[in-house]
Image 1: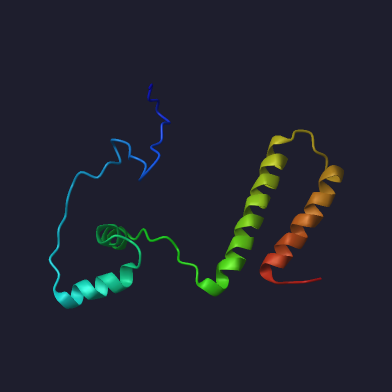
Image 2: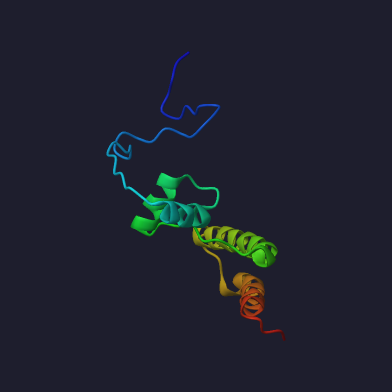
Length: 118
């Protein structure tokens, strides 16, 4: 089997590139209370991963459960907006007259995002 650059293993994590590979180990000793606090904060993350994220300030945003549905809707809307922007940026020769309906829809979308209804 020929292995190419884009080959992805079927299981486990994707291997990091040689420049991103973590080869240095940093250890810390914790007492029982500190370990319990770390375990309560880390959730499903591995201890080392959580400590790395905490030290480097790289936590993913946690969306509270009641906001999960709205977060998903907003992500979908943002994706659609990016597609519209890409289409407008790549279409040459679009006149203001042709763009007017799109501008109206985008304005309505913006108003909806900030919670203003007409």
